[in-house]
Amino acid sequence: MSAIPYCDDVLDPSVSLLQLVDVAKNLGVAVTRVQQLLRDQQLIAVRRDGVLGVPELFFDETGETVKWLPGLIAVLHDGGFKDEEILQWLFREDDSLPGTPVQALHGDLAREVIRRAQAMGF
Image 1 (cartoon, rainbow, N blue to C red):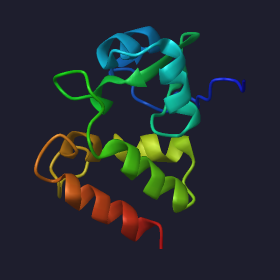
Image 2: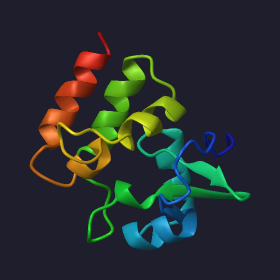
Image 3: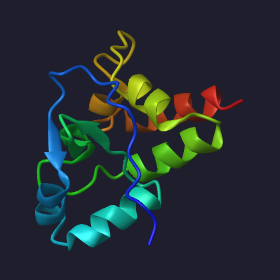
């Protein structure tokens, strides 16, 4: 079994993280399943203060992963982006959305975020 992947914490300290055990509870799965989602690059974790966490904004109000997130991460990885770069892009303010791309994934602009990610890869 390979190590649990994580990247440097490039997020603002105000970005709330969920520990892997909390992600597992929200998704109704074992922590090992969350670890597999990280290995499969469907989620991205960071190490903050020695603890692995996943950004809370990666989940909807019911605790499920935002519908578009795994595909968006795949598109950005395919475009050559590293996890740190993906997190920086997702959490960077964008006046044209408004807000950040990760916030837009929760609303009507999710397809626009995907379109922009696809365009960045070329």
